[in-house]
Length: 210
Image (cartoon, rainbow, N blue to C red):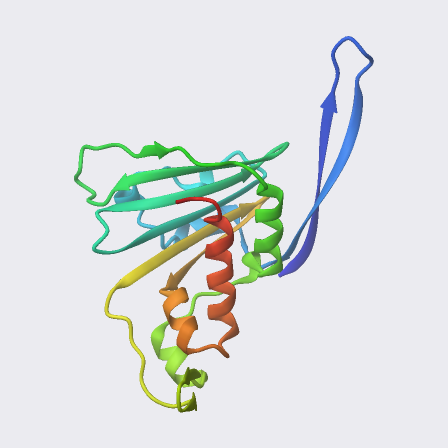
């Protein structure tokens, strides 16, 4: 666990003398493991998702959000990378591991990606943790505003919906987490700050993508 400011050095030059410009990016609090120790604990089903392991990435920063659920037939993977600038790519990946289809890149907008990254940092993307249904029911009081008033008791479950695998690499640190329907659960468990942060991270990385 640490706070990191990453400094990037970008050089520009052609006919005029070359000069260097220093750019700093604050990435927030990092909950990550060193690259060499992470491979034993990977939770991403790479064989099913048909994309290379993030541990092989050469980018200084790489964030991936895998979106899957019922009745989706494909996994949607949104990837945000940074080297000298931000870039976002989206892949539609056939769901079944034995499918011969290859991931297809989807056209997306690439505007305001600096703001996209800033929003994820504000939501603590590099220190977010997974949370399961048992933890939600045990540790948080559900809050739902109904016509008759605020309800803070009762059961709430999502039978299907959307699940997310989040993984990131920042310099030599990286980690993976699983989000279980954060948008739906946060509607009911409004006092659960982990669900709120998960929902905000998902919304930021998918901003502008139809």
